[in-house]
Length: 195
Image 1: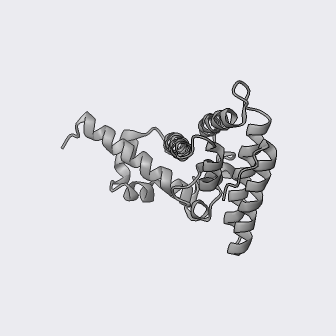
Image 2: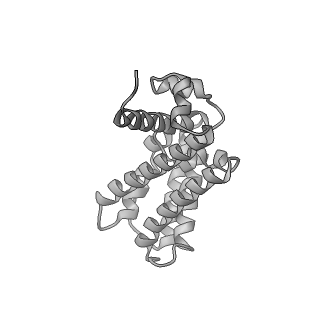
Image 3: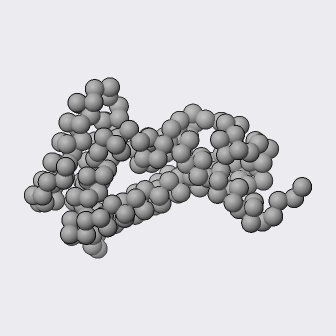
């Protein structure tokens, strides 16, 4: 039975969405095509009708995950228009986000994996990171050049979540996240509490 173009596109988006979550949970090389497709409710044979290769899927899933992360940041920022960076820190540097691996930050979950992937996957991450930097830059007053403070803020936040996820001790995780929040406040000159 032939699948309509609309259904084929819906199937493709389902695979991308599922892969986005499964890659964050297992890494790009930690899950095979058979399990990815099973997670999407399809057979492995359907994969090559939708994607050129696993790398092609990794690129699409990375773009989707990073776009979703930008949307989450936008939603969090909108909850506190007077201080959007504090709203982002409250969400991002939380124990809830720290434990949310499959839907959490793709840069934290897949950043080191992306560094070992092909140029197309790294380009998807680069674009997503630049989108995040532009958002931060607007909040810290670097509208035209998202360097300096914006890069420091993002590196601090991503590094803190990565470290907080890597340890067993929940007290240490909380301290890492809190220390990052304090460092961001110092970097940006913002004196407001974020927790």
